Figure 1 (cartoon, rainbow, N blue to C red):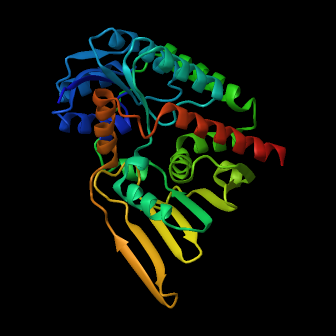
Figure 2: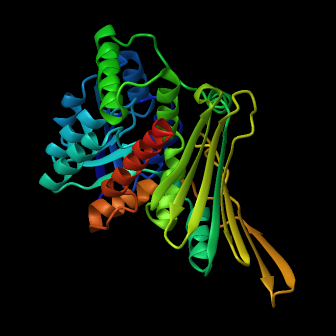
Length: 357
């Protein structure tokens, strides 16, 4: 099995907790040969820690190295680097969200079509063994009536403090300014100039609830439409109602609970006589599986419940295994760029639904 020579752009929290350790653990599949970050001390520190030979602060220098693939996990937007990587014919893994606007999505997809490289988006929850099992169970429900998503989100620091994370106060001012300008341009391209609380909701949808949007699409396809959208508590709470083919409805809620440690993200599907639910752990957890509950009725009279842990494999690690399979065997990514574009469009449509109300 060929080892993929890979470079990582962005050495922040999710790279330190998940991506880089898993790449090193998957030594039969990957050879980590380059890292890049705008913080000079951080990239040198991570490079020393993991014995990475090539270390850069400019992504262009990394792309000039003899690499097969890149993993992009730095602060959004990632469009500029993603397009450059695909134009350099590097297989490209983009940590969610792929981008903010449909225009960005189209630029990335155009670069993919013009290359021979694989494009995959980092929606690790679609690779979760519990999610895969729940998806199969949901497919057997003959009459789905209602879908519910609850995403109760504490402050990330409550969970990242369990790890030793490395940060340095040495990012050049021009790099910070460039990142800010790119971010503002991408958001305005996506939803125009809006009040701060609307922008906060947009960032929440694109950065956190995008996982739920992706998981719903993986089970049911894109929704037929957005029925309603509500923002309250200054953008710290949000609810949307989506419609799906077959007269199904989904109510999805995201709530900011910064001082409550218990992260809770659930997806529940209700049929006439069966219910399937899954609870996801935080993305900063390296060992907690996603429990699945299936409920039904036997002979229409006897209720039964099955609760199970499918297995304990880490979904971040599994998506890297899948990325390798896509590169070496030509497998179509479960989480491809075209699907991610549908998610970007839904985020825009949800915000516009709120603005029109």
